[in-house]
Length: 173
Image 1 (cartoon, rainbow, N blue to C red):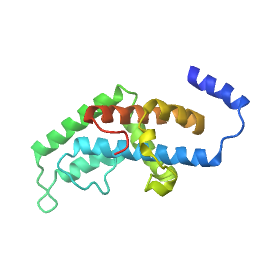
Image 2: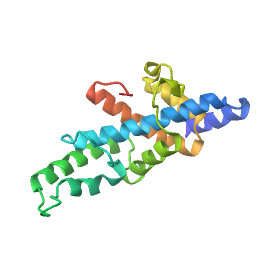
Image 3: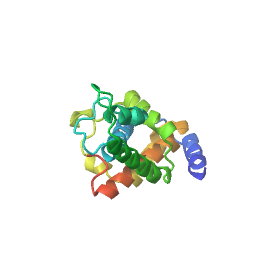
């Protein structure tokens, strides 16, 4: 709450934000959401190399689909059990960071569709390495994003930072 109060006071005394800075922040937020969605899916569907059509919002449906033979309807119970175990373990870790699968699975999808992702360097993001610092990204989100979305975006950032630390990778891969 203190962060939001500080931000409101700051916004009252600050000039309007630069449109280009806000647009860049929005792209980065969309990319954060996309990266988190992919990392969650990769943590669960280890065997899948292509994840087209897979989203965290429809993950349980995909588990059922992947573990059921389309020709015979036979269920691979071992695989289903493994996938659900990975899903539950992953969600358990993320819930400790504030992640709510019923909310944030759809929220990440919304952010990607609304703000897009970073497709290339011409998107106005010249040096992604400068965006590998969660603290810097938190400040940027607080400065540029609408107040009603900041808490959920910061949860997404925390979860993305968790995966980066766990996997020994950068925030943006």
